[in-house]
Image (tube, rainbow, N blue to C red; front, side, top):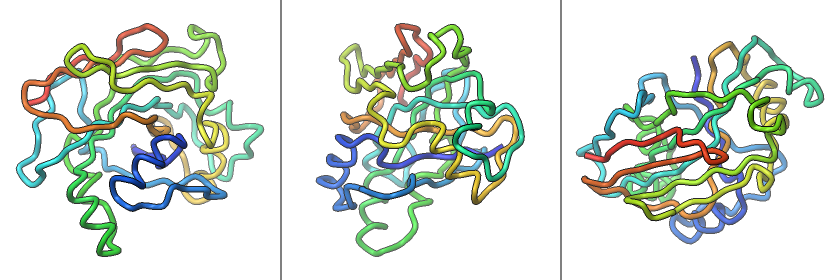
Length: 211
């Protein structure tokens, strides 16, 4: 099982990331993506423990698509055949480590792929129950009862089907693979005692504490 994460897929977040880290604002012809190992999964609304190696871990709430059949070199027009359910996830990022890696021209794995850095909703919702259009879904994240992120998949720079087509040119997609499709603006740090709650089209899918 692979966790495929799409970077800079919402323009406003790409701009805030540029201001924070100096990273390019995007404008890529293809999706930017990276992988997390399966040990990064944080399941069942278990608490997230801030790792000792970082002083600044940020939340990034994202729509997650679960692949339900094997495919490689998938044409965009056929990509919709490869998923039927969606959930929510949080891509936790050690922002201080990421800044350091970017400044040194190094990979980001230590900032992105650490244990339990990919929170995943216990429930996935059939697209049919959400109107059937993956590019017309709203989601939001609140921290301690205050809304911090609001996004609509209509605002994605690269659609889900485009992402699947692009990624599958390089790596085979298998049943159970997860695609974190990018985060909207509003990312920020977490602290012990925080409570994160995230909802998709009004359905609460994530609710867990930071320790």
